[in-house]
Image (cartoon, rainbow, N blue to C red; front, side):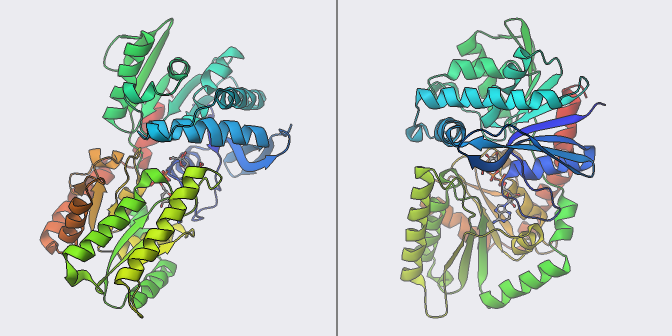
Length: 455
Ligand code: ADP
Ligand code: F6P
């Protein structure tokens, strides 16, 4: 096999154990750690003008090649079209789409510019794997430069159905851009189905068989590759000495109270606001939980330059304060709301210490936290996963208590059921989810994708 070249908007830290929030970073870190290769993308910095030079650094078998963005590209490509149009639309929030044609042009321009910077680093037998919605036009840009290598694309977030996708004014161009990849991968069967429907109905593609579509002179293959975790590794991480210390601190601070934990980037798609409301409802309908239950919400800040993200932050701070004011006491804080990052092993230990993992996004591609929570549990006394039916993980986990995050009372009832579930039922549910994680781990995700790409 030739070299693997990964292209993603954000290139994360590859220091083992170091926190980097976002499922993409966790997944790519693993592929490259095991297979080696080059990781190309944005270094997270901006400057008044686009930098000329790509910075290349070697880390064992991984080469990182990163570059800054000009302020204009950051605003138009990253904040604008990627996160004010594609992100809300792909998460079924057409009400939050803010489309400006110049930002779409900026998105195209930045993709072309990134492709030009990547081009000189490529070798003829490289396999190129592009990740996520920021870089949909990357294959077409590389093909126009004469790149003949295999190019695959994986979408980490949901793919919307036709009525939502077509709210995006240049939706046909996006579909056409996706058809330049040799393989397009999705998290769930319904995401893939939505893509196939859109490409056939909107772009005139013809279905050749289950996996392949004919689009003009190109054959586009698509597949389902649910991203995952390594359950054994997570169990070990939850056990290390340092995490045991953190867990002790958490337990001491809780006294004997039960704990519901939630960990997700501060993002309107994650349903944190609705979750706080459900926690409040639980306190109302089951007074026995008052003073006997805490919720920890860890929510690292994300995309803070975007108004909708500033608003959700403001709203959540208000809700946490209000609910704590209503049910708290001098020695009791019902909701602990935290914006900081933790080391991975610490986070896994927190998961192990919580009787309930509440993972209730309004819409989510996969949600690795759901899988991490399950993997971190004690097999003989596991906690219960309360999971949104709109998370990709719901397609795999029959042992979770599935909820609709728009149903506040239903979520409160599910939290109560989870908190009072007999041990035998908890063990049964956990065992079936753990089995699923072992069958489809993180290695299976990238090996199957690269195998289908023909590597
Ligand atoms: P997304 O990719 O949308 O952010 P996922 O749930 O798929 O959502 O992935 C989030 C990843 O980031 C998980 O691996 C999770 O453990 C990690 N993470 C989230 N919050 C923190 C935090 N505060 N500190 C460290 N890691 C975090
Ligand atoms: O999985 C969704 C995702 O967009 C990833 O691509 C990314 O790692 C994460 O969310 C964090 O987002 P951002 O790179 O905008 O900080």
